[in-house]
Image (tube, rainbow, N blue to C red):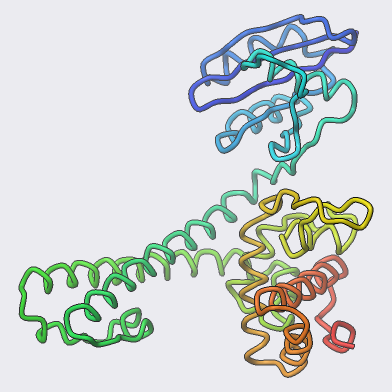
Length: 337
């Protein structure tokens, strides 16, 4: 007998449903987030389970890794793609878990990529670096705004970031001076932490072939190459360059019928870190490479600035796909014909 399991995972508990080939419920049970309890419940059905579908928005590492380590076939549900049956009047966790198992039984369960546990920590470390950079930017903006309000002076972000001495003594109010000094202290602390993380990531990335090859692509330096490498994972999970560009949010999102625009699709579907990386690469490529600048200017003559930059980001994403898949350096003559 074939069995199918659906798990609706929450912050402090998860609901487990097991069904058979006729959609009959074998198990319906809510458990606390304790791996030992989950394994104990499933062990009696282990030989017949065809798969376990897990739906989670953020806290799936422990459950997915634990079940996979125990030898279960696990599928991480694509929460953006899975849809409930519209005819249902009432739903709850019990219905949601059953629906996951039902879709898996039918072979139409939309699944996401389970990033390998061995590499996931390095990817998350680089994400932490980005988070700290964003915090630092907030502190720098606070300093700039305070000087602008108090003295009418505009300070350069790079001067603040590099620790160049600021004219704090020109501020007559001691409370404002203390506020700005606290911002400066936080920026200095964040500089130290960011440098530490960057060095750690660089040590672990330097021998990855994809990381080395990506740095040959226009506009992609060390940080962007690290981001693209680690956020992509196994490049061969994408069947073609179009799929990778779509995952990188570098393609348009619209719905058409009979030549008419019927709205937009899910614009947030894909990887936001790759979307950021390729837009940053496009900005750098425009400033430093004539071929990229000419392509951007041609697109801008027909579209607006944002769409023109996104068109270049799309080009770079497609080029990056082939660079990573084939292990070859970037060839601009093939991208900008």
